[in-house]
Amino acid sequence: MTEQTEPKPRPLATAPEETGGHNLLAGRVAVVTAAAGTGIGSATARRMLSEGADVVVSDWHERRLKETADALSAQFPDRRVAAVVCDVSSTEAVDELITGAVAALGRIDIVVNNAGLGGETPVVDMTDEQWDKVIDITLNGTFRCTRAALRYFRDVEHGGVIVNNASVLGWRAQHSQAHYAAAKAGVMALTRCSAIEAAEYGVRINAVAPSIAAHAFLAKVTSPELLDHLSNQEAYGRAAEPWEVAATIAMLASDYTTYLTGEVVSVSSQRA
Image (cartoon, rainbow, N blue to C red; front, side):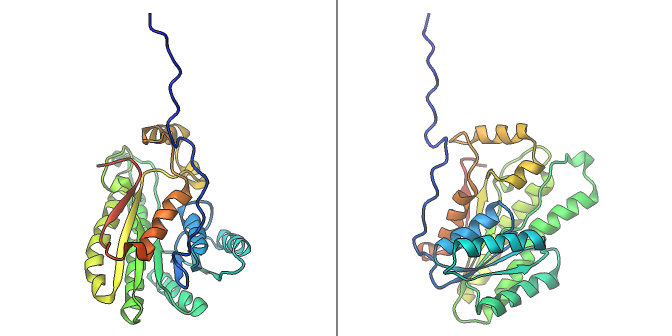
């Protein structure tokens, strides 16, 4: 009879402490959409600040946005933080985000398109309204922000960087996620095609594709059972911390990736 032993814990099964900034984005101004709350957007804004950038945070929820901006200002008193309310489903609001960011901080160097909307609904039960809302926020919103940013970058001489938040579901199938997966696959295609066009303006466009990042909002819209299942599928047996995704976004925004454009970087162990 073989003696049973306790399974060894997986390396990195517990997230490491967040690494400090290295001044990768000193002197730059970043705009981050859907930055209120505790998710990837707010983590990205914080990472941009820790890397030396000034930041314009944006979200549709005015109170949460103000709370986020105040918290970031308190944490980074030597950096400039501005807040612009924006609903990415509105072309007018998106255009005003870009002009408002320039008015507040003088210029834009980086735009992070983080806004997106998910949900769990099988196709057979999905309404037109559910499909349209996810596509409009997640894909069309990214298009609107990319278009507005490119119009700005086209008319200035300093170039810029756009980083989109996609998802591994742009490559992989998951039950009840057809609308979200279709939108994120669209974000990937938009990233590739717009990057070719943006090259003539000195602009790089890339995307990250996280699998699962643990934050409070995700827990509200996803069942604990599904979160556990998805986390256990990962190589480290856990979800990513939002800062781990944000660190990759900061790398893509930095001069460490000056020859990288039109690419989607998977921040996960999930593959197609």
